[in-house]
Image 1: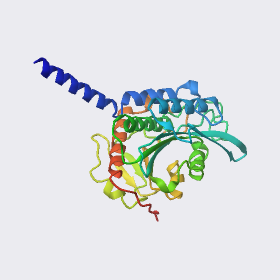
Image 2 (image 1 turned 60 degrees about the horizontal axis):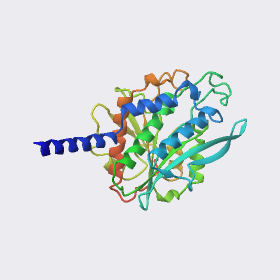
Image 3 (image 1 turned 120 degrees about the horizontal axis):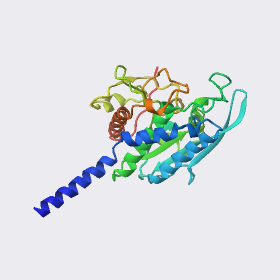
Image 4 (image 1 turned 180 degrees about the vertical axis):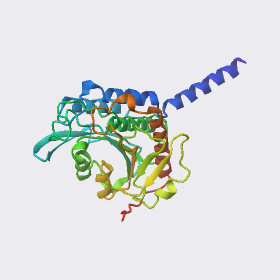
Length: 307
């Protein structure tokens, strides 16, 4: 009886440990809560909150056991000009999981938001904090959950992983533009890029949109059988779009883009953490894991231009 009981406890412990690696609504809520708190003041580019957000992501990457992705540096610093604003500073945060493979999967999300809107020339109320819980603290929460899954599950996957938190997205996809022009490794070695931007406001009538379906010959086969109870999705062929996957697509990399759609709080000070649906975001990440795992059964995705 004691042996059986001990074996049962050990199995229960293994099951509990395995469950820790799955996407968690509690962790999603915690990450979004931190990144969209008033003290980060909307994570604006060239604002203290934006820098703090990048440091937070770096520390999470390090805790998860990733390696610095930019030649022993966690950050990829860059400057850019946007309209009348010159020499703006931002940075990408890059974590790397080296599985000794020939090709790498890039998973990305942008960490910046509008901040206090001072760089947007009156388009948004200047001085008000735009917390950006859905846009895009939700995507960063997803990025960290996928990083946890692929570092902590104990399996050596047949592809390397690069996790990138992009800066400067709200000012014209600046971080991903810079990365694709200055990649850490050749873009020809990228299997595909998966981007998450605004995945926290799931609408059951709409479902989650997955763009990039037409950017590789193999996507239709990879999508077969993918499902998660309580979360529906639809596909869109387009590889271009208003988020960081666009930069990779135009550079010849197959892409996927997860997005739960617009809402009344988009780019407003009211995009706050309590409105995010963490349980549904968990389901979206489970769908992403299925797609990534199916894609790893293919040697190398073949890029396809969407007409």
